[in-house]
Image (cartoon, rainbow over the protein chains, first blue to last red):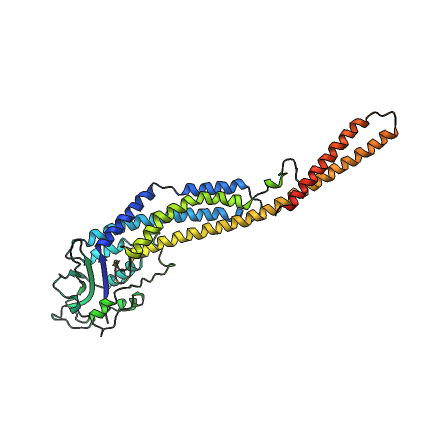
Length: 234
Length: 169
């Protein structure tokens, strides 16, 4: 059974967040936090401790803090860039390619989304993504299995719905689907893909209709393993 | 004789290290940092994560939200900074208390030693005065009276200082 993977973007909200993060990034570039802690270190040094564990640990503590401050600044800068690229990629586009979505996810390296999508895309051959227009009712798109015969027997469709909120327009929910063009084989087995399912979020069962599927879109569970993903070390 | 030269070491209980004073100074230095960190970065990120574009429902791919993930990581780093600073304060407080105990010990010891020295000086001076009184040829008595009085005065001051030092917590 193939899972339904849903993508959602609220461009308006994303733009607003991007503005906020950009302002933050700009102000941080002029702010030197290290002076606070250099002064703290000087103050502790001036006390000339002879006793207690402070003299052993405080330098390490201050070094850790300075390192984290650098990571925070770097993280905010990366987030700013990633949001900008996301908005540019999805805004005013009727048709998206698999590489578009891949490129967007690559701006968030080592996140769960990046790894999941990479896993999916690596198992698909020449995927295409089409943005359905407003006239199409996404709820009519059934969940599809790899072994399901399609109308033309040419494509196996793995639906990924992409809902885009357009600025100034009543929010239209379009959907994109990711399809694997394999003209030679109706029954596509993706053994590698099947094995990867353990890292993927649980999806609705086949017998559920799409309305139930979309109703389960939020809240999303982003599972991440801190020890595995270190987004600050590219 | 005390290992500590009491003339150069702290001779006044008020000069002993005060943990509260130390912490106040450190807190003053870090309050500006906290203010900026919390108001500028933390609140902005929290707000955007809660209701803005960094919310999981605002942008996600294949069931996970990469922007949300990165933002949460940043908040986590900031929380870690707070934890480390709290730990630093705790260590600083404990070290100040430890340092204060040791300084008090050294101060009281040095004062006691000095009292002993002065008492020895007083004792020798009194013995010499007795000798002079028994020997009409020696005319140093008046000067010794001054020395004896000054020595007694010093001893009394030192005893008062010792009393103050012992009362320090």
